[in-house]
Length: 379
Ligand code: UD1
Ligand code: UDP
Image (tube, rainbow, N blue to C red; front, top):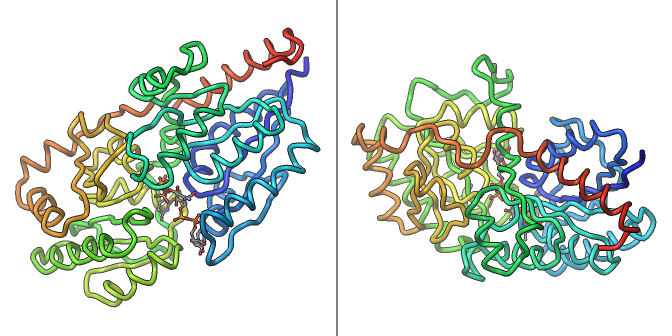
């Protein structure tokens, strides 16, 4: 029995990593026709993930421009998706998380009166400008969505507080854990062209990209890294630099060519995830790393003032330190000097999922499509 057509839309690296397990599960269901449309808000960083998970998009808007801004992404996604939605008329559009692709794909679907399923729904900081524009992207997507796949109970509570009906919310776990468990292996061998890192030394993994950190805040973060490598001679920094020129130019200017700094291109997800398992400490402003690192038992210092992922902070494996240079140095120093403080944070915990989130999501989608057929396509 043909249940219907589901269109999965995404555009950036983290969305692709977290949607890959959902696409894999959807494709196992013969009664569902699955269509993948990428906006390519990211290009190379997206393609790295598509090739790892062997995803061949049915549509590719190829939107990325070197100097894109929020206006060009927004209008590009909206105009680009219109004809695809009109032609394909999917029964459900699935979007992920909080990027501009996410929100605008949900908006375009609404304009076509197509129901939206929101994967990783309900994350909130309650600060409109932090992270920017993600907090508003995910809130607005939540207003537009019909099905809300909340990764945790906290996310569910956030949605209930916004008067989303309880029967439209499912707590599924986060699909990033599905992707991670599929990718990290104890016998993993790094590829021959992998940067030469000394795994006997204490490696600090760094990633940065958040818009609200651009400029002085990012300068402060990089100065803190310089101070830390001056103070601790046995540490090395491994920093896969985001492709965004605003991030890349400053990182190269301040840290490029320095001793014990490995500034490298963004890594494919497989070596990156396996590298996380081998490092001593993680400093990041990324969202995804806050979910992955706790399950690998790696302490994370979050270079932001707010987090929409409070679960690991509560459990003690993630600490919110902000972007102040002294604060970063103080918190990192504590972990580098004091073994008991380090061990307190280095516990493997799994508040974000058990690796079966995608299965749960697809079960809900099957029920939704089935009921929709019965109710004559009304939503
Ligand atoms: C975007 C998302 C952010 C998400 C992040 C994940 C928005 C507004 N921002 O931020 O929510 O957390 O992705 O990384 O949706 N670039 C490349 N190649 C790539 C990717 C990016 O060259 O593969 C460069 C381009 O010059 C591009 C720039 O990075 O113009 C910025 O990309 P954009 O998607 O606008 O913003 P991000 O900071 O990556
Ligand atoms: N990641 C990767 N290669 C890298 C850096 C990060 O594959 O060089 C992965 C990481 O494991 C996580 C995701 O990319 O799953 C996070 O992406 P990013 O920090 O760009 O976005 P955010 O999660 O902050 O939206």
